[in-house]
Image (cartoon, rainbow, N blue to C red; front, side, top):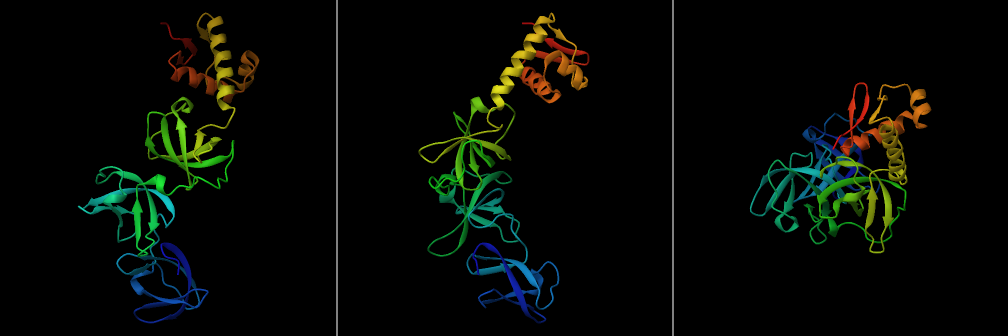
Length: 276
């Protein structure tokens, strides 16, 4: 039986108290009737979550995160010994005080790693992200699309867990849209460093270069039109192509970049230079 994991087991017998379940190796475990979400027949396969707290627990309710995974979890209540966070089960996941990186607050959400204590087998949570990421045998490369969990801001940018395994950083100079700690989103590998840490971007490589080029082109067109260009996001794609040589998507991206930089105003009749 895999501790802290969802196990697929076969129902070998049923009585009025519950189900006797068995894995492929013939090991058996009893599941109380009330712990299974729907009724199962003898011979059926069911998914159950098995984990150790003070004793070995089994439930047909499945958690939102398993052992060796990161997830954003919300604190339900605090004690002197630690915090209890919601992971989708009736019994909350315990995050000991020594596994916290800050004073956690009730009803707030934090990135938590679920781990199995090597000595006791007890399942616990930790906020010490850097203790559980891999810094070698990196299997992503420059340009790869990756999954990001943004968990902490620093002077350099925003720290992220990559693909549930690696530590990454999005430099502030590479952030071109509004993002926040606590978000899960798609990113792209910019560089794998010698220390095993990874620089990531929120857009595919080459995006910034094309945006800068298209932005310069659009700004020049508005300037040459005495500070006004009669194009909007409702303009015909052919018209945009004829005037600027850009696709409608590239035009909207460049206009959005200029607007966020407070260089232009976007009105119903077109784009206007912001007068200093």
